[in-house]
Length: 218
Image (cartoon, rainbow, N blue to C red; front, side, top):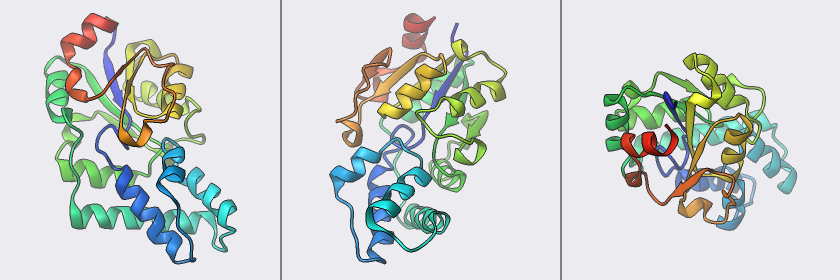
């Protein structure tokens, strides 16, 4: 029986990928480089640190990865603070429905906590989540299952009792490696991702509800 729903952050809670794309290029332009939308989309689902390890190698950047990550994270938080962010379609209704039906809710993300906090505070949804696990809480990023297994432990539940909502191939792979059922959310940024390992896929969170989850997953 499913007792908890674990949400990925980027792309599921909100369509943050355009902001990440802009922030990556703002930082890269300081060194005279840019990254294409196609190159960016190929990195969706990877941790910020992993992405910047790849950028450092790709462009032979002189700065340390930790410095680059700090610059990128600060840029994202600044953009969210100045411009705001919209919740994914159907998210607020789904959170209210799931909480009303006594599902435990959590976020498990390869993102940094200050970015997650900036988004959920802006959206006013922090109250819904019993726990939030970020890349700072784990040693390995997706597709390694550590982030989901850590979340389940914090919830006091077995993996089989946790349903994951993910939008990327690496996230789906991580959820399945953790032994958790998974719903893939199709998004423009992950349209090229192979999410066939997911138990089912939807085009919008409006397609989900507590009754659908109960009927599908028990």
